Length: 189
Image 1 (spheres, rainbow, N blue to C red):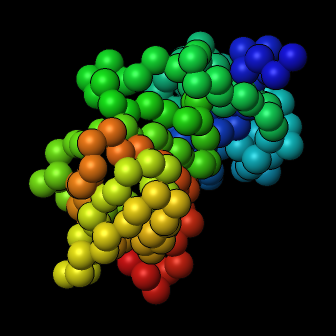
Image 2 (cartoon, helix red, strand yellow):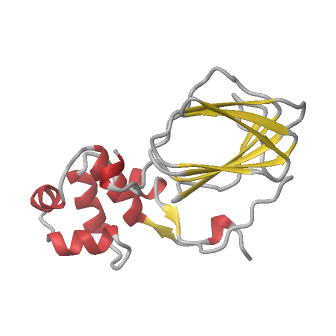
Image 3 (tube, rainbow, N blue to C red):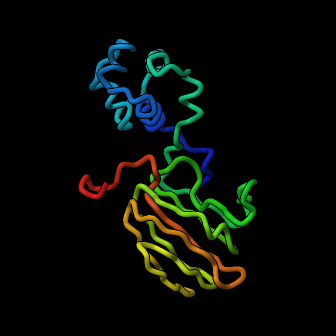
């Protein structure tokens, strides 16, 4: 129960990501696949499940395979428990771990200790930083903000910022709408 791997796959999200990565319109994919634009839209929005034959036509139109689309599909789960002891830190970043599995609309990471304080970040969508333990200093829009345990900092999409831990073993949670989602308002670009 609640096992992430038991859930059916949502292939529509994988189809949409692939189509957008190739910068194709639904009309182009429809022409290439022989399927209708409304049906493709229903697939992308998870209102229709493609048959194996239809999925292969879509995959061909997107210059990939049905197997690759299924591998990139999101699990259709509304609840997924991520246990602290079940997650391994990212192999290249021993002090970083993802708090949300898969390619989801919400991105959440936990940083423990310090990281490259000189690295500047600029995310497409809004972001929230929460200091779970310790303290950090965040530089954003020419100002330094000191945050302690329990403090949060909200950054709108597009704001350049950098941060550093000022106390050993600081733990920071960063939550944002995932980069593949277009959540920014047109006027903020």
